[in-house]
Length: 115
Image (cartoon, rainbow, N blue to C red; front, top):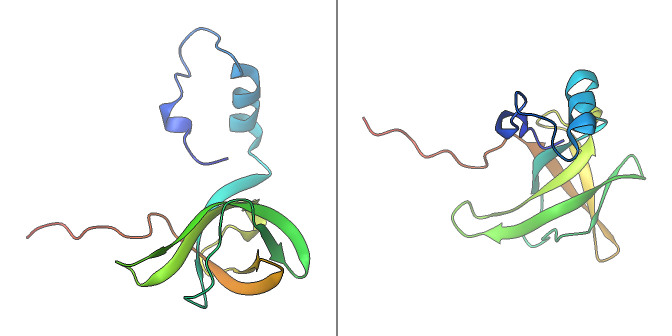
């Protein structure tokens, strides 16, 4: 779900949970981990907040913060694969208030390579 299949020892003998992981690798997963940024900088998503789309709860925030370097509120959440494309509009339920957000590509910041 969070695109970390590259760290799994697929060629190793059976390990706890290997059947489920192999099935997910073959069939895909229903949800995935995405990055998002809040439209309003003062709205900060926190762990456990609901993610909504078209009025329905579709996921859960795993982490969120205000980043001084990027000067915006960012976070990560599990959402259905259909909503994982960068630019997709979502809402985060911040203490009972629907706050606009949009899915963004990860990582949030990539350091420029030195010339």
